[in-house]
Amino acid sequence: MNTLELKKDFHNLIDSIDNESLLSDFYILIKRRILGNEGNLWKGLTKKEQEELNLAFNESENLENLISHEDMKKKHKKWL
Image (cartoon, rainbow, N blue to C red; front, side):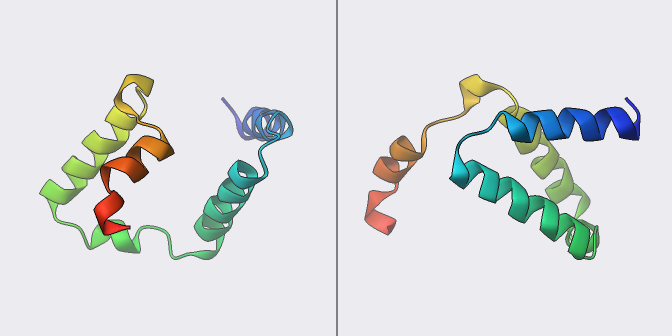
């Protein structure tokens, strides 16, 4: 996929979202990536930490591995 196609698909994705909180999260994420020093945090991790983070990210792509925000709050209520 080239840059033009990515931009078009990204705009379509954003246009399809009606949840203001989700849009705000996307905005913050993209803004931080543009303004931040990309890669500094990653470079500070050990090889094992990088592998564990990649594994966690890949597992998060499977919806069966995710739990709702409400379930997470219930699970960790004593720390909130």
